[in-house]
Image (cartoon, rainbow, N blue to C red; front, side, top):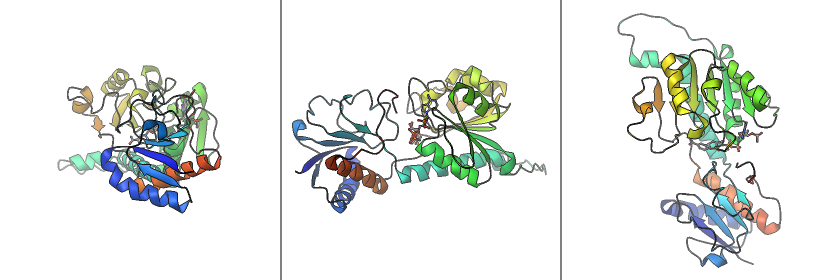
Length: 310
Ligand SMILES: NC(=O)c1ccc[n+]([C@@H]2O[C@H](COP(=O)([O-])OP(=O)(O)OC[C@H]3O[C@@H](n4cnc5c(N)ncnc54)[C@H](OP(=O)(O)O)[C@@H]3O)[C@@H](O)[C@H]2O)c1
C-alpha cells in the first residue's frame, strides 16, 4: 500500500525537501506519495513544523505518525493528539551546527577574546588565558545536542561536567543527575551551557538560587530555550557581577522585543535563534527512515515521551 506523506513544513522548504525525501524514501524501498496537499482523512504521515500550514490535527483521522522537523517540541506536544506517535528531530547536521556554535562561544569566553576585539587602548596588558584543562565547563542537558557539544569540548581538553534527568555514563564527562547533581554541576561551572528542552520541569532551571551556586563571574550560554532561565534573576546576577557575561540565542518571546533589557545590557550578547538549524539532507534521511520503520511495524526512532514533554 502507498503511504500518503504530507509535507507540512514551511512552504519555502518544499523545493529542497521534496527531491531529498523522495530519494531517501525510494532508497529504502518505501512506496510513498509525498505532497503538500491531501484530503486530511487520507494522510498517513505528517512531516511537521509549527511554522508550516497545519495547526489543527483533528481532521487527520488515520495518522500513523507525526514527524517533527524541529528538535524542540514544546509547541508540538500540546497540538498533536496523544494517540498519534510523535518523533522529534535528531539530525547529525543539527548536532554539528550546535557543536560548532557552542564551541565557538565557549572559546570566546575561555580565551577572553572580547578584551582584544574591543582593543587594549595602547596598554600592553598581558593576560595569558589558562589552558582548557584548567577550565571547567558544564553542559545542562546530555541529550543528542548536549552530548555532542560536551564531547567536543572534552576533546579540546576542557574539564566537562554534564547534567541530565537520568544518570549517564559518557567517557570524558563527569555526569550528574537529579536536583543534587545540578548543584554539584553548577558549583564548578566557570562556563555553563543550557541544552535542555523546554518542559514544565526545566522552566527556570537557572534562577536566583541556582545562579548563586556558580563561581563568581561565571559565563552563561543558552542555545536551549528561553524559559530555562529566569530573566529577572539573570539580569540581577549580571548587574551584581555574579554572572560575568551571557550569550543568549533563545528567548521567552521571539523575536526578542526591542525594549527588552538584554539588547542594551553591556554584558549580554544576543544571537537571533541561529545556534543550529535542521539540515535538509541529513534530516530527510531520518524522516524517511522513520516512515520505513512505521510501514514495516518496527519501533520509531526519537519518539517523544508525551508525559515528559520531550
Ligand atoms: N537554539 C537552537 O538553534 C536550537 C536548535 C535545536 C535545538 N535546540 C534546543 O535544544 C534542546 C535539546 O535538544 P536535544 O536534541 O539535545 O534534546 P534531547 O536529546 O531530548 O535531550 C534533552 C536532555 O535534557 C535532559 N532533561 C530533560 N528534562 C530534564 C530535567 N527535568 N532535568 C534534567 N535534565 C533534563 C534529558 O535528560 P535524559 O537524557 O535523562 O532524558 C536529556 O539529556 C531542544 O529541546 C531545543 O529546545 C535549540
